[in-house]
Image 1 (cartoon, rainbow, N blue to C red):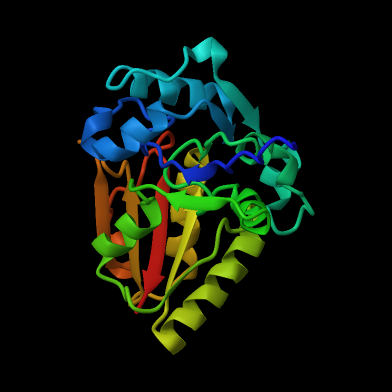
Image 2: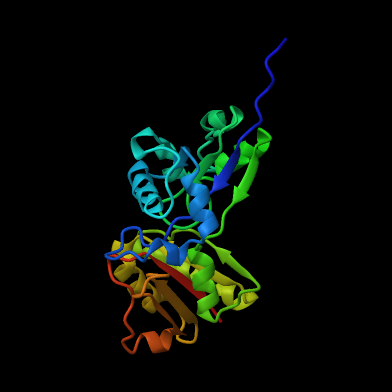
Length: 257
């Protein structure tokens, strides 16, 4: 007789705290519910953005719930570098080989360095591969910086778009900002993006130089931390000296009418 085919495991999308790279960390139980933490503790096979940060996350989880296996015995596989650089939908990456454990009956966890994987972070190619292989996909509850920032911005939450990163070159960034502002003012659609912390100062300077005085600009940084800083004012008000995010804290930017 042929051996029975093992039941497939599931792909869990496991959110992580938003304090990656920040000077301080919030207690993990304040930002992730018990079900998310206990589920993460029961997973031994991981696909991630960064193995080092994944181990640090699992160490924090293990302080609340016993891990199914010690850290050295956790199977942690990083997504290829080109997926980070080109994006899941431009790199031609096939995530199916990373789901072998799920096909063998083991649950697999997908994590990014901060927040919800596959949202403003790599991982959607793995989720697509899971669907193609008939593997169940289970998103767990946790913080999503884009939605937290949008909700706190006072901008249109019924019609919005996330546009990733803006160009690094000052002239190209200014042109892109003008384009996004025109779209926001014409349609009412909120435009959101993120920036690498060390470029926060350059981003704010470019915004104040490029945008109209009456355009509303919201910046949210350090979300879920005691030091969270969220401001939403017109560009004219920002120019009066409002303080933007520092060079160490991730930030979400949003503009609209």
